[in-house]
Image (cartoon, rainbow, N blue to C red):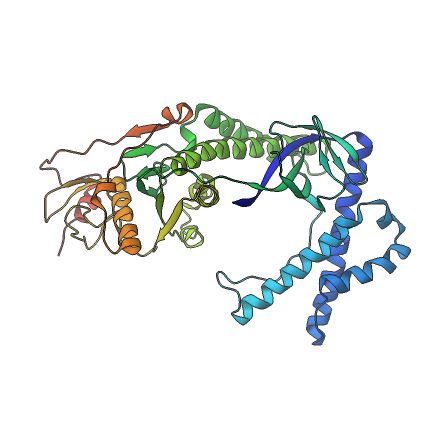
Length: 424
């Protein structure tokens, strides 16, 4: 089946190409902000907003007034108008109820600070052995770490500059992606803050902080942030440290995403159906004590990777409702506790006496509930299936949970945690 996928390459433009890129970023931003302001005026006056076709017609006479618009790739300007029109369409559809999901707010003005980018169509572009051919820029030096597959069609290329000063080209292609063979294996998993992920098959994956090089980068970022806070805004040292801090943030993101790519690829390659919990991350971020940890661990990034890789491979992904009590329900007998304190990591079921690891129990319940929603009943043969071949890069981040033996200890944790297990 044909799929759209993107390959991101690091590019190294010359000084002249950097100047032309900066002009393109600025011209694209000018078009977007100018006609966003015009649409706001029209909205207040009760007039219809400008669509992409109408904006493109206005760009032609504007080029005679502002001649520097002719120096850049005209496709970037047309895509800016298309993005603005799409943003307004999404807003109006969201307000009228035609668009499902979270309410879409009105588009914001583009800023010259932060990440800059523009998009150009695939025609007139080419990915060569060690460069990428782009309109106006001609050939830009690039590291082609992954060649374009044979028969793939380049749909568009997005050129971007990160706050750390690095340039990238994201090539969107349409290519044939084969589906994987049937594995006769299903898995449910629970995401957490103490550990990144616990699967129903008993695997516990550590969070990215357990990676030594990731932890060292975070420590270095902490020191650089302190130095940056002491500098005077506008000074050379301020700009120098700003770039260093931005590069460390980018490095932390790349290190975390590399780990998440390996993990998501393993989960998709070893299962036919994946069950996960529909987390309301925006609501969880309201907890000021945990918001920073939730931001850093980036559950949404990992979930998105699993979903798109599963779609390519023909693997089914099912979400369990966020209000399902997966942690405080016994996965053996179905007994439900009235309350379960967050500090309680292990508890004994008052009904059947089974001792549960909190996270493993939640992952098992997510698997059973997902199977019930899919098939009408849980499939016991898939409850603790084979974990498959774990990649070597994941072995040091993986531990196997052994089922606890029945003891007289009610729970491990504080007195308050033990009291939370008492059923009235």
